[in-house]
Length: 181
Image (cartoon, rainbow, N blue to C red):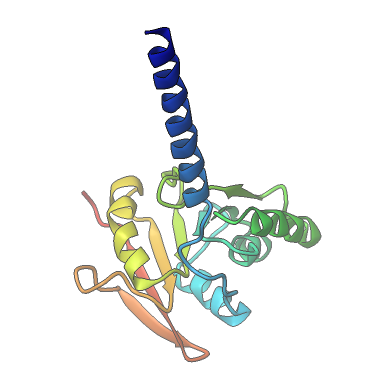
């Protein structure tokens, strides 16, 4: 009887450890390959979003941090970069220090689908269309009406057409505003 309980307990511990390890490994795997947004596109995204010093810019999948760093440096906005790759979070933090805006921006190693984004007044994206479409309900649910959402290259699908589309260096940039509920 004790041997069976010991074996069952050992099995439960092993299953729990495997499940916990699998969950951690899965959450750290990026859904997209990191490709930096060209600076001209960054500038256009922030311009079309009408970023001001009072804004809090969230970049979902922030890579090296260039969007929130530019928002802080050029407009005086605050910013948060959410990035799943810890090496990119470290690089972005170093870039913020080098740019002199580390007091206005922060970078967190989190999954953008589970992060709290409710304080954002502007959200920027350079993800895949399928990820934008998966993210759309979270954006509408968590962001305040009037929050601007800007995406580089990929839109939100036919159910949510952009308010504005522009071309920058042969790349489309899309703008939406979170509607009143």
